[in-house]
Image (cartoon, rainbow, N blue to C red; front, side, top):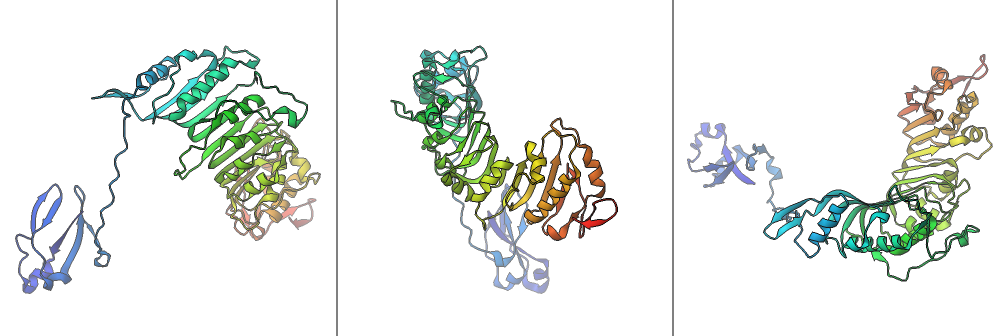
Length: 474
């Protein structure tokens, strides 16, 4: 940045003389160099400019004039990795599995690009353990690694060879940063790990491997999908995620979906430092939410607890940790919310968005057979009933509005969705929309209210016709 002074025409007309010819010298590539100082008599008629190469000058106030401090120079990020003894083996292994890595040629020879926007898919039943390198290229950043059996696999158990292959894969990738690791559809029993289904204590024994855990650098997403209890235990005891760079100011997403287990306490063994999104979905046999260390690692982010065991129990330590977290959004089922909300800190910051799934319990809940959810402190509330009922009683909407008035007073936006699972509009909606209005006196912060995505007028007073003759306030 270069500074210079320009004399105004006013100063010259007052007899102060023309600006020195040498004041501005050498305009080259947008840079102007000062050669002479400006007389003090003309300081009141000066305009200060800042000029950068190839930029137009911008006027600044003299009061903002400060000595400029040069910004520290950050070295550019390394584009390619130096060649090592693992370079050629890494390229060859990825080529075998139809994942061509980005490379370039330097004076060292063929080198790997550091950041690879690739998703490597490995099928344990198709991997030759003899072709696995001992190490992949250290320092490489891979977008994703997915481990999933091939479509040809029909084995009811997880063979010992698979375990050896997956362990060697983890060892090989221990020096690679994985933005995403996904283990999918390995649903058999791991050999030599006895599994019974009599009780919770017996279903997943305390299993430890004789080998030390393998450190993996997973930067953004850990996805565990359709794993059997024994495979889930094996993975959690085999992998150590404590080596993740703590200087990163964001957490990772942990996505646990469709795993046939009643407990997830073994997730604590992974040693995850920070979690920004925790999704536990479609696990109807999960009787206990008992991953205390995982809960303590959660920071501001998204929480999804959907389609779990109807009477799931939340351990006190887990509930306390989740309740003290400031969530951007919480998406859960009605029964889980009733258990989770008791742990919320009363004076904490409101949840950004609460999405409640009523499922088949909507009509029963609103008729009083099931206790109402606790007061919801949120900016946006979405209530969805996908029970598939084609016709719901008119009292459903009346009771719903009464509950909203009493329990959701701080919300800025509310959306009610009542539709069959087929997705067609509910037959009652058009009739309800003819007279539906919202009383702002009970929802002081409300800015928008929708019923099946149709906006409902917000007025100071709401009147509903109860029996066709006598209007009464809702």
